[in-house]
Amino acid sequence: MDLVPLLDLQRQYATLREPILAAIERVCASQHFILGAEVEALESEVAAFCGTAAAVGCASGTDALWLALAAFGIGPGDSVITSPFSFFASASSIVRSGGRPVFADIDPLTLNLDPAQVAARLRSGGAYKVRALLPVHLYGQCADMDSLQPISDEFRLGLIEDAAQAIGAAWRGQRAGSLGIAAAFSFYPTKNLSAYGDAGLSTARDPDVAEHMRRLRNHGSPQRYLHQEFGWNARMDAIQAAVLRVKLAHVERWNELRSNHAARYDRLLRDSGLVSPGASHSVSVQAPISLPWIDERAHCVFHQYVIRAHRRDELRKFLAARRIGTEIYYPLPLHLQPCFAYLGYGEGDFPEAERAAREVLALPMFPELTDEEQRWVVASVAEFYS
Image (cartoon, rainbow, N blue to C red; front, side):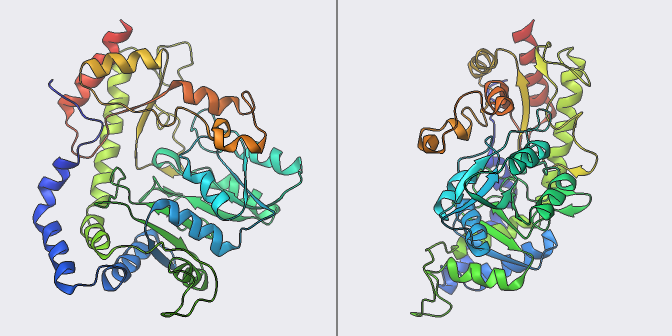
């Protein structure tokens, strides 16, 4: 094949061009470009979609995390437990709120935060008061909420979801965004529900908390030129809201297509002889993290389809030579990032996160991906290991 991209947004745009352009024209005709009716409508629609009390649109997924933390009251002297295997914003938003990130290692099968490691970290004590727990629903699979919620209750922590990659995901039928006291979504252009630029959204169980978020996103202002506290300029553009409203009507179907693609990858990889149910690290490519180990309590939306590969970097170069797009999410765990050196962590502190960073590789995944393209990807992986 000529090219199999990691993501192809052109294919999606081709199917939605007319309604997208009409939505943008609607905003341009209104001359109301920041917040306003489009954002309010999106907030109501996403809150209904997630099954939560309220939603607050903002400028990015990073802002959404900060809003959730700040509205909960995280500040200097507080710490928040999260995963070291996530995008930078999961931890940087804690710092931005004035808090201190505390990491716990990940489950080697799901790559989500390991509840046993969280509990051990809490029972070990420390100089900083832990006030919240921030699990990441990595790659579109919810963290183990059955285990994390009791821990949160026992230690009286606020449970805030990093659902940046998980719009439409669910745990025991309850959607991401409604599982904690608050949650954060990203609508970055690569996400399952994507804007035409940066955008994000926070959900909240308590409408009063949502109102606090609305003040915080607008310089702490409940009305023009009245500032009750220090907030931030984290407002959502109306054009992004209008685009997202068009796409929201399609996201469940797109997520279903992603799930079908994941099942096809699973089948093709097993048929290739490279992986098998319950595969160990001795094989060339470990089974994808989503299957066969996806928890039956979870509904995964496959933001990414990730394999764990022996000789990962060599495999990636081989696939690139065939113009097959791949990506590494994430090549360096957060506890080893230079800016977090002050936290005092070092190599070896979170071995599962560090091993995952050496092995994970995301294969092409988007709703419009074809059967032929998937077969070529897996045939190429098989040829590399032959």
